[in-house]
Image (cartoon, rainbow, N blue to C red):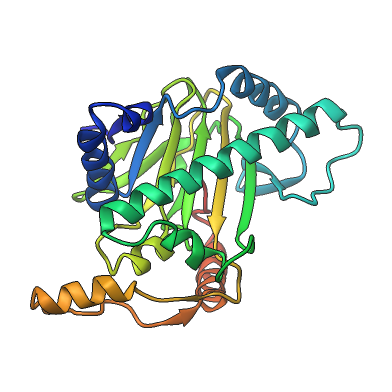
Amino acid sequence: MAIPVIDFSKLNGEERAKTMARIANGCEEWGFFQLVNHGIPEELLERVKKVAERVGGKEERRQVGECGLEDVITLVDDNEWPSKTPDSSKETMAEYRKELKKLAEKVMEVMDENLGLPKGYIKKAFNDGEGDNAFFGTKVSHYPPCPHSELLNGLRAHTDAGGVILLFQDDKVKGLQILKDGEWIDVQPLPNSIVINTGDQIEVLSNGKYKSVLHRVMTSPDGNRRSIASFYNPPLKATIAPAPQLVEKANQDDLEMVQAYPKFVFVTTCLCMLSRSSSQRNQGSTLWGL
């Protein structure tokens, strides 16, 4: 069993309906899918890999026992880079983030259409109205080898509190797993693909039709795994609620749970996640990862 792999370029051809249905299945049944032929130039992705090898290794080390599980650097538009970072690296990542943000918005438009929502509905919700208010951040992570991986459960299983997550993962070293029907499934490495996963806010907006699923990163005794995760999230002040059209449809279909989620401000979700994270982190067994 493997997560769906979808050729995104076929949205523009004769197989559009089939491709739309496969994306809907990925959102409804898996909460994860991989995109190939997504429109981001391979030459740019190759440059991003080289930049990731040079940066992100020592900015923030999260450590459990004798294993440094994850080295992280987080990028936003006004990011302060580590000293001595070449301008070419900064330019590459800025170009990559621009392309990835466009891809995220294309994916959200597909979600709109599949859900029967007006075009741009999810983007508008995540920008708290018109304008460009969404948070778009990128986390460059390295997972070094852990010689005692058999003693650890890896980085703790979690769902993502935000909206749409786009992951450019390692081509060769696996580690990411999702929970599907009670079984942990590897997200198979696939060169230059982009892994999409739907966060908690997409589950809420879709009134539970799309799933935010548990996932985790397993440690390994060998191999240095690269992970570049980008997050298209609402601003903290945004009010998130199920789309009224989907609540109305649930009512018409006489479903037992008409509105599956209350209306809330996004920051409250983040605070709950941070609180839960801190208590679990203090147990010393697992951490977050992607």
